Length: 115
Image 1 (tube, rainbow, N blue to C red):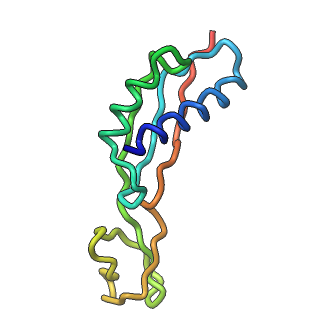
Image 2: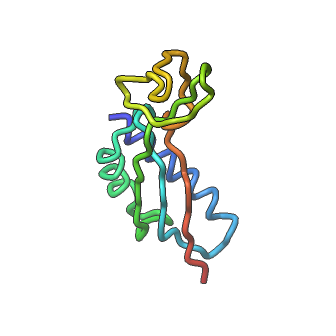
């Protein structure tokens, strides 16, 4: 389960960010997770609950927002959502598409409680 290592790396990144605000505690973390990121949201949520104990994020709430897969059509130049099994442009039926979103796990927001 690589979500454990992803969670560990996330907590290291959060610790580094929170050190810019001494005395602050992490209270909220908001992630965007795309269907092509390779990360299972439920497993990451579970791993976070395990790894956050004893860290600056031990009271933090993790929110994971699943993002849609987004494609760009090189023929009609349109951008649209797609399923992970069908990247055909819904506007012109072209197969000349490329992924422009939904292929990453992104730290979208970090909420700190600064005393």
